[in-house]
Image 1 (spheres, rainbow, N blue to C red):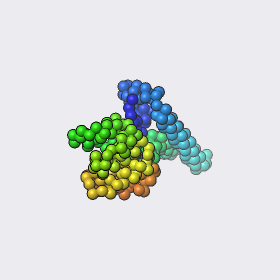
Image 2 (image 1 turned 45 degrees about the horizontal axis):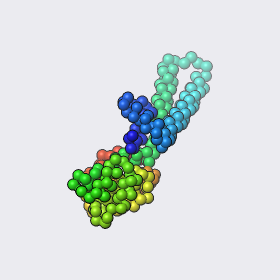
Image 3 (image 1 turned 90 degrees about the vertical axis):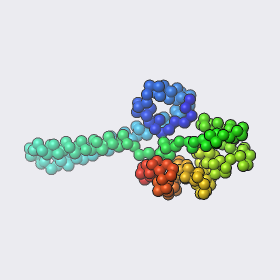
Image 4 (image 1 turned 180 degrees about the vertical axis):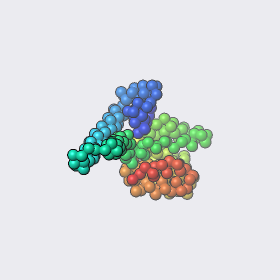
Length: 243
């Protein structure tokens, strides 16, 4: 079973854009995961509501255009070029309706989910042989974030640099939905004068977006875009999509 499906994974499934292997794996997990089932149903409902709204809006706009045009003709024979102009207007309205259906606005929380990737393991690659730390990182690396949080919290003081421990703790808390803990831990790393500060800013920005605190996330993303040291492209993309 895949440990975490993103917004894009669910959208690809509903749009039929997965490979056959991906679709089978997704549906196998779907049958066993009630939270995934709920997420898929929410996506389906959002699509239905968006489609219904776009269709109704388009129908109203087309009716208004034809009614206004009918009033103007006053019983006269309508020149072909005017018919062409009316048809073009209808096509523009239909295209607008299609755009509304195919390009729904993502919430800040959904954007955060789609941009999330766990911070990579910098511990076991450094040759750590501490059993407790190795087990904590194994839980983190396999997506068992709640287990990882418990293990991170039980590590003896000094086992890991504080800023790096806070970064892993905050990232795991973000993915397990413990957003207050994530904010607390990541803020300490983001404010530090260490090499981990940019990563702390990125994951803190995602935490704010998960909480729909867009105005707190924007300055952090802008700093990352300006600094150009970590997630510069992704920070810029996210800023462009936020209201």
